[in-house]
Length: 604
Image (cartoon, rainbow, N blue to C red; front, side):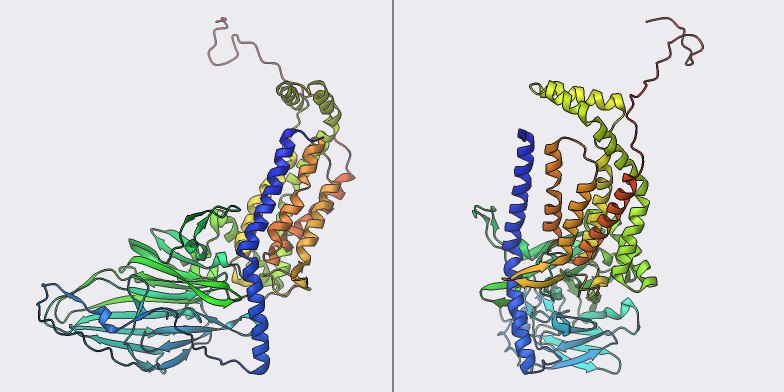
């Protein structure tokens, strides 16, 4: 029979699993079901007609007229300021420019990049992959503090030099020009980086005071059926520290299971801090980062959530945001220019590190980031020689297990000693079953008497926890695994679904992983009481739940390390059993002359 502590542990484990499944069903399952329906619709449409290579996104954000930019004179305005000028009609002019890695769709009116097509990456169904396709907020658009784009810009595209220019004149003496410059480098991470200069000029005779505007980072949304929405984030960096919110930040707060609302839904995220180094919007494997020049740090950020898709009442959300220019004061004839670099491409840790500005922090590896960074470096290094990321994960796992081999052997030996000590432990538990405190004291004396560490068998698992979560964080964002194949696995960055039964995906590798865990536990030396051993059998269920709908690369790592551990256990089973002998405690030397420390030998 289980004691009270065992029942509490089992109840907590079951509650945790039920809670996770409830959270998953509320957060991910409707999204995945909705995305599956969308993909079926996309397949039906693609069978009937070839999609246009250049998307024309529908506007999903408010576009303000040029009069929203009316500056405030430094001197008090007179009563005869004049009537509000009419809003000019702007044609929906668009131009495309490209590099060897991406194509950019520029648009007049809002004066920014409506969409980016990445040539080296594919979306669902091997179709072209677009960034900022559905946000309605062009990258580099000029916005107010509420995230409303300001329209009225005219465009002039110079494809020969890779320059797209926009201009706007506002009554009151303000002229704004924007110039996007495509990168000149080829075959480097900088090729995803676009230059942007925004110039504010006072063409009047009176000093102008501008409240400051915001440069939009565009929007990011999940691009694949299994991309997790919690990776859809807005991030900003200040003093080397990144702050991040995901699309769920805007949800109304509710107490789980009960459904009581703790706070209403939020429409706008806004932070007024100055000294901001960059701001970004990210999906699971792609990002757009807006970085001001080093001497022109941003002042304030905003972010909004938008509905990227909708089907059967289940929305899929994206996130958009911007970084502030700070207040600007212009003397008559003066021009002030704000310079930015815009990265729109994959979340490539190595490439972003080379660009600088700590932009690699957009990977958001978490508390085990050092472990994740090392594992990513090691995996890429091995893949460079073997040509396969799956093989690289397997080899890296074997190398890690080889390093931990002595520790695992020591743990196995400790578990065998515990197994030999088990009859004596059973006697003590029976003898002091009515006095738990005394029983624990006697057990500790027994462990000390025979030199046995009751937690020695757990040490390898504790060491591997940071490695597991390091892999978890790394595989969740590293672009390298995307679209990497292995045996029946089509994409190591996605679950390895082989078939769906009544709408439920059958992911084979996590099931194999759980099976190898049960096998490993079955052949491991038994230590501790029977109740503790039964609790340990919950571990495969927990890991199965944790990995089932995650990147299959994580299950590949854990399955490989399980198989390696099984081989090691079979090898150690053939080794002689350790001897169980009492530890001889060395006698303490008596204090006296010649014992060091200047002792006089007198008793105190």
